[in-house]
Length: 339
Image (cartoon, rainbow, N blue to C red; front, side, top):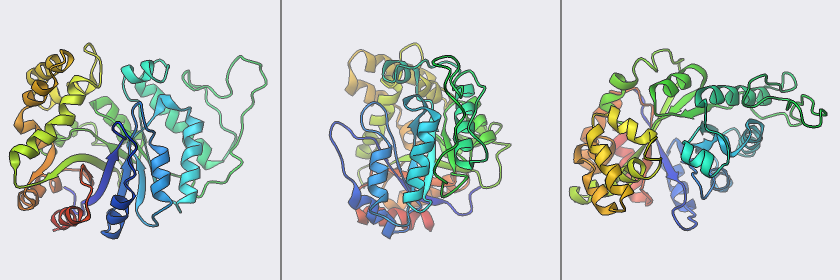
């Protein structure tokens, strides 16, 4: 159970066109929102918008959900992190994740294999950079430092910048139980995806059992405040259909596997079939209403307020509101979640 459930924003990544949401972020800061998170896939990056918003705010935490491992070396991400953390006065929450083979190999041009081992090495190297206790080295097979071979002139180096914080919080974006267990073991927080609060313990209870005190679970939640429940459900189904059907290969789709663990394996297969056949509208309609409702915050504000007990009774520590842009609705949600 979470005694003090925090509220934040998830802005995701740009869809088709550039999107400056400074007004939304400023409104969230005025309302006392805990954090704002940005994301990336194969378009806009997570870091530039986050820096843009950080320059215009002074209190709200700045999170990446997530920065893709394969898009940058661990030392490059560590440099991004220590730079933004210093310029923002220590407000960074660094979320990293492996993404999926379709993006990693198709867009980043990197091999996808051994995601758990890669994540462990990646986080270790970043923490070495920030700690500045010695020149950074790694004997791991994925990110060896110095690089073996080449000119033979590489040597261990230490950051010339003294980071503002030697321990920047690291969150891991994870869906499978093994990845979640890794997050609980080595990270400061976990960024889940399509989470049903009533099923966190049954699906992930063993994986997060060993988490340290203060471990954060920051859950992005599609949020639609309206009296029209049919409309709200339809909006909530859009990202579910996209990720089940299109954000992964037919043979390997971690999002489809996740929906199966939630109890909708057959339905998820049908959504994928329709989506890959180009029947997108049918794929959206095939997403079960119950799935969309259970993983989202939908309907009139009073209904959302009544359903908050499901989230408070779970281990989730922060709700990251997705899809809301206007200050009046952000205020209503803040009041409902803090009630």
